Image (cartoon, rainbow, N blue to C red):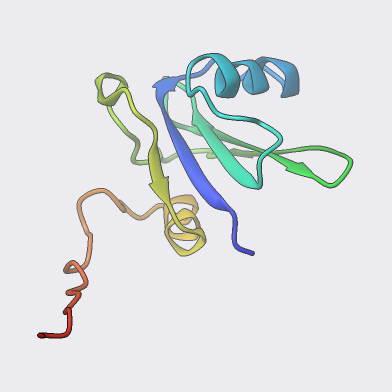
Length: 113
């Protein structure tokens, strides 16, 4: 099963480790950090990202630091986390602006009676 990816809109102090990030997931996002999901956090300068996820018997913390460029990120005023998929996460980590380059919405048709 594919995990959901939650982007936290607030700016995070990258000195926070597993416990601090799990507390943000529980207290601010009101989600379970042990759920099958990736939680993604960015710092104020937008040059660092951390991903937190639970894998069977422990947390995994993944960290990426850019040397010259910046990640495109949410505004802290957005409040609610944004849910994306793994493909969009890869695009985000590769430096693409996933917030302004969205494809057309999928049309869903219902059968007529």
